Length: 68
Image (tube, rainbow, N blue to C red; front, side, top):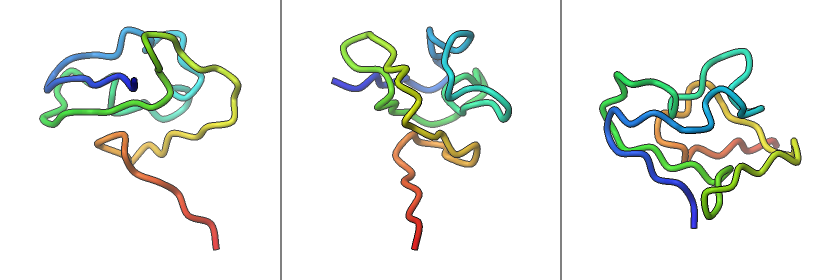
């Protein structure tokens, strides 16, 4: 199960998440006015294999990057 953050809720992995480096992930913003879904956290555990990428413009956690 992925982690779902309600409006204004901050990700509990904000300081240790490798996908929150450089540009901040929207899941770490307390002023966020929408629900954020993170598939990098499953059953409360942060997946840190480094194979993911969090686009800094992704405001919902559901945005996918398509390379063509």
